[in-house]
Length: 345
Ligand code: IPM
Ligand code: MN
Image 1 (cartoon, rainbow, N blue to C red):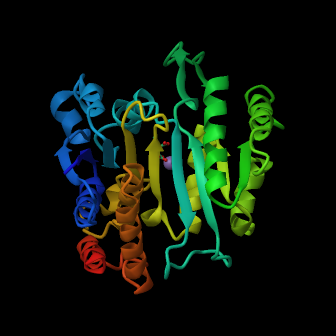
Image 2 (cartoon, rainbow, N blue to C red; image 1 turned 90 degrees about the horizontal axis):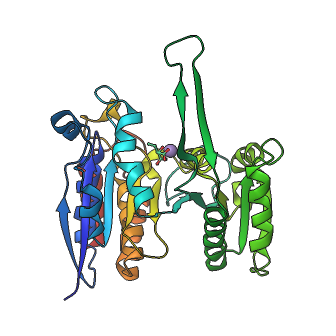
């Protein structure tokens, strides 16, 4: 029997609880190849002990795996987010060229969203390695009244073109619509560049209906008529913001799944819920594991385990349709996990 080797990085806060839940479900999903895991306790606690979020050879260690399942990173009471995220999550996305961050936004059966509209099905494709997150910049005259801070967005032709192509390919497998999001009315260099590349790539996909939106208008559209949207492609920061909005309209962060994909498969891809470490509820046992389980299903899909992935999604929706795990904080993590395991059997 073949094996899928998975690196588990449970991380901080509710990360371990939801990762355990997801792993239990994935292990019971009936995959065609055996699932094998190695657990890495890289986290803010690890930072406190060693002075680093992960060992210096952490990236090289992870490279040997078929995929990474991550819980959450961040414990701001002890380690500033600017340190913890740049020491673990963000370097993995960049080093493994996980340039496509994909986040599905739809209501699981039985989940009540805040909007009147409940029949939307959006896939947000977020650029994940450059743009506003490129890390270029610095501070001078620090601590004086003359202090200056510069944070430069970097958009490369290669980076913009490949994320758009990825989005167009996704649109082809869905309802054939792509919305490209910029702010080219105000940002006339990088965003006009993005619009030009959109037009160029669109010529290769005459079967896909393309529209361009400014980020502000897209924020309104996602609330007012989300059913009009199919695939959204956005830059790193714009995608970050729009996907929290997407999480809100799908009932909350407890349902928001994501995949950091290296489409060329030159390095492992990483799967993680969008919610983060949620320090406020970290010890209450009420973290919703749905987002982590859904992210796990995306991992199975990526590993070619499409049947097992559908089985997990069907089990999730059987549970939500029965009203378990649909109201934030109502059901325990363990109760929801047991219900999903029950539905799988
Ligand atoms: C996300 C998160 C991260 C991001 C943070 C924690 C750096 O908000 O995955 O959406 O901005 O990418
Ligand atoms: Mn975010």
